[in-house]
Picture 1 (cartoon, helix red, strand yellow):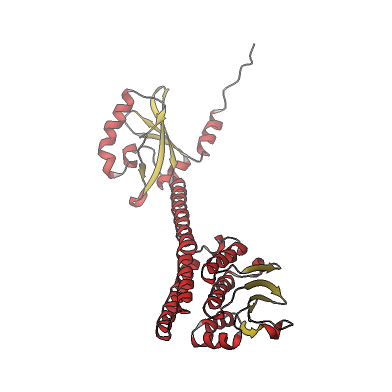
Picture 2 (cartoon, rainbow, N blue to C red):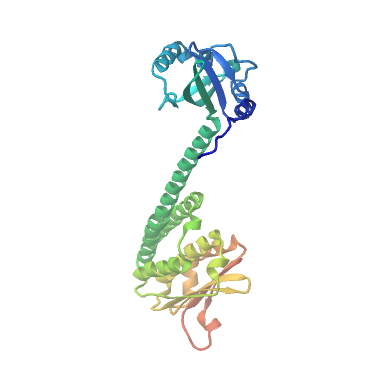
Length: 343
């Protein structure tokens, strides 16, 4: 036999309702408020609600129809949320309105009443708006990154390839055409610089692939105009030592150095080495071509060596072109280009 549970003290029930975080109204059949808890007064921002019509809590645009809606509900009362699918608002003091969620419950306590539970939705709607804004911003970030990747992986690669092809063509042309082609190369360099700036502005630098793969791509592109494939070697933690800005300039300098080999060196072999040396990141390009005397004169007539020097000097580095015989033992031909920047 189950134990009989005594009904709770009415004062306890009243205390529980008064302490509820949601507003609670008790309304009679005529729409007069007979009880409102503390939270309800706080929501409406009024001192007293008892004795007033519940219709006064409905914003003006919907107030005229509210009496008819109450009559419809009283004709078929049920436990349910009010205004399913609608955005409800409550009229507060000083003309303010508050987004709310309302649940209705009919009760019989000597006579017929309706209990309305009112919940403030302001914080929830604010959070939903912030979440929607965050999703929009995230979608925008993804789109910016996609554009940046396309610019870096497609547009820049095509521009670099065009520059190398023009460089190779210029080396076979007469002096007048060569000068015009060098102007074209300068224009391409300017466009590449602007595109790189856009890529960094779009915030995609942190999404780039491995440095070794990027340098291997440069070698593969250069091999098409060189007629042979240069060797590539990386020593030490080069990738972790480079900032995005230094990495960009070093990759561009490597492209330009190999382009200069194609234009001026008349080489059949070339080696590229990137390493950590002391406090510097050092890129060395060695070829077996005609050597620095004629090579450097040709580079100075154009803008190749000056561009390489400028790229290094902006980070406090340097770029030099020397004879291989000054660097390596034995009677060897060719040149050694050394590009270094501190990190």
